[in-house]
Amino acid sequence: YQRLRLILGDQLNASHSWFQDKDPDTLYLIAELRQETDYVVHHVQKICAFFAGMQQFAQALNTAGFNVLHLDLDDTQAFNDLPHLLTVLLDVHQIQHFEYQLPDEYRVRQQLAEFSAQLRISSQGVSSEHFYLSDDELPRYFSAGKKHRMEAFYRKMRQRFAILMDGDGQPEGGQWNFDANNRNKLKASDLSSVPQPLVFSNDVSEILVRLERHNIKTMGQAHSSLLWPVNRQQAKELLDYFCRYCLPLFGTFQDAMTGQLKQRGNNRQWSLYHSRLSFALNSKIISPQLVVDTVLAHYRAQQGQLLCAEPRIDIAQVEGFIRQILGWREFVRGVYWLNMPNYASLNALSAQRSLPSWFWTGKTQMKCMQQAIEQSLEFAYAHHIQRLMITGNFCLLAGIDPDAVDAWYLGVYIDALEWVEMPNTRGMSQFADGGIVGSKAYAASGSYVNKMSDYCGSCHYKVSKITGADACPLNALYWHFMQQQQAALGNNPRNAMVYANWRKKTPEQQQAILARAEECLADLEQL
Ligand code: FAD
Image (tube, helix red, strand yellow):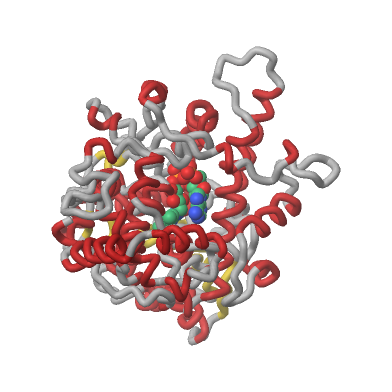
């Protein structure tokens, strides 16, 4: 072969221009590597999903007539890391030119840049052709250290890509953002309409055996039948299912959480109206453009029908969903690239504590935490508000070291890749970046959880109480956090009311609240 092209596990993009022509002198390499299974402890389903996706992608390329070398952990065990493997393969196949798609993780991009720099043959890093914004364009929208605001960025993206825009440059529907319509709780009467999630049954038993054989340390529940989409057809089916059954109420119940459906003996509670497309997107099995265009086409087709058998979709749902992909997803990527590698060590609130061990078991008496963690371990998935306002909020209030929080999130979720995980975790959820991603710390007491979920009703702790051994720990922890962080958060006008309410409490009340918080913090394990 003349040329070697490397395809990483999160670069399963069949539409890439690499695959437009078949060159008999090009060899494509897809390899399972210890450096990727071991850089953090992953959820076992996450490794299975990536390995199954890689296998299917290799097979599809092979069937289409490309020369593919697919190596599994057995084949690569003799190599220390990716550069070692590449060095040997370039030599064995007498390759003249090496190409790779720019990795989305800083760690791997550095590694390949250094590797290429010392090569004696020519090499090239090319775009992964996945995102709306290419790597070269990011500095036009983002600067290092700057506190960017997603909403301003999102409007630029809507205009630039002419998405949900009227002809005259105005946002369709007269508003840029319909978030205010998106804050409903699921009432008991809403539960029976929650759709059954579409799941797949991909046989990953061989992968599981391989992980065992190589002693790969993992977390979470293993299933030989993987429910996540691992190829393009499955990803498209999931997208279609989302448009039909989830999109009509996506925005309405975007922030809602329930434990009731699980108690009723079925498992519809875990994804509700969410798309669960994040793995398919982040592995690049499908592109953000395909998702946005499909959603828009579905919405327009429905608008064109006088009579419609499916539930009607309104603009608030469509806008809310597109904002996540065209807005948030591209936004956090820009923040990541313009701020790495510094971003990975930011700890603006000097948080130092360790994560309690129940983050790996779900064995806590706090119902909300138990539900979010158990579900994460069972499905490698939690939806955004569970990540931000349940587990994330707890870590924020308890002052958990952002390195530990990052490692947990980077491991546990099916979609966790550092470029998207870190700005969301360290930035949005832990405020460790001092406000680069979000304009405020997402801190909340038990009353938020009670407002958006039905968890509190069956909790060991009382959400109505702030002090006392049976009081919801989040209540005292919230006040304690706001007190401790007054220097960092007190100047934000959005917190003025909070501090005013604190000052209204008597010194005795304040003392009792802080004492209850200290008691919780002294032994997080027992909560
Ligand atoms: P839906 O609710 O159906 O949303 C559709 C799509 O929008 C998602 O698939 C995703 O691609 C995109 N999206 C939504 N919110 C965000 C966001 N805040 N940032 C970037 N993209 C977004 N997302 C990841 O893809 N990987 C992560 O590792 C990750 N870690 C997170 C950690 C924390 C602490 C928080 C608060 C959020 C994190 N998110 C992460 C964002 C978001 O929670 C997930 O993208 C979403 O829950 C995935 O489920 P879904 O596909 O059903 O999403």
